[in-house]
Length: 348
Ligand code: DAH
Image (tube, rainbow, N blue to C red):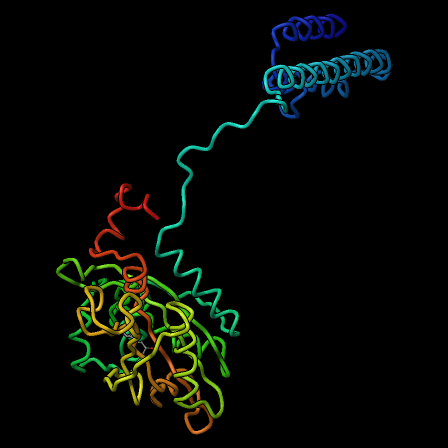
């Protein structure tokens, strides 16, 4: 027993010499002290088989050796940690007197994000929430819930990408949302009424792309529901937005247009910011720029949102965010906004 103890101690000290980092130290600790098979642990286990006298004698000795080796382990650990700290201090220091390097090629926001942020600030200043919605949307929310039932011809104008076998109910197909309007219903269901919210977001359509059409683009939806909301509130809000975007002298023109989810529905134009209505290249000589659709929310849509149309009413609007960006920066090819061409993006 005595010899065994001495041998363990010798082996331990020998092994210790080769330890260079914490990992190796841990391995050493395991070899001698692991509960299951550590050499020192094994010897301690054997003590119980000795006679009373022998146990007294060797027990004391074994405990002393064990304590001695454990102390050595701790010391080694402290030594290794100090080494590590010194090494870091030697190699990783900061010269606080060094002048800062010029920042080259710092990134910046995409023009779409610039306009979106600006409008989010403007609408929050009027008490609107800013909500986010799913880009992969159920057929139900994208169409049916906003009063476009399966056989409705309005579906033809918004062909999109259908996703097969997706979601819990794969009988109802899922689509890449064609508009942010489904969020009208989701917002009412989730937040209840009264509500004032905008929903900026990415939309998708199955388009043959050209300078004015793209499979991916951005809209900014808005919804206001409360008691006694009428058409003039809608006009007031949209005029405020138009003036914020294009200046105080901007005039808004509303003309009737059919959208399934509103009644009455309008198409919204503003006087061209470039020619102030005289007619130019930007407005194609009409003097007007069409930038949104809007209307009083249809009772069917309110009902889908869990709202009683006899008690509450309101308006909704949808801006072509991508269109606003193109107008603001004079971008004449919509595809530039998505293609990631750095030469284009660097201009903003
Ligand atoms: N969702 C429509 C579109 O994509 C835009 C729109 C029109 C939104 C009228 C509205 C609205 O909320 O009231 O063409």
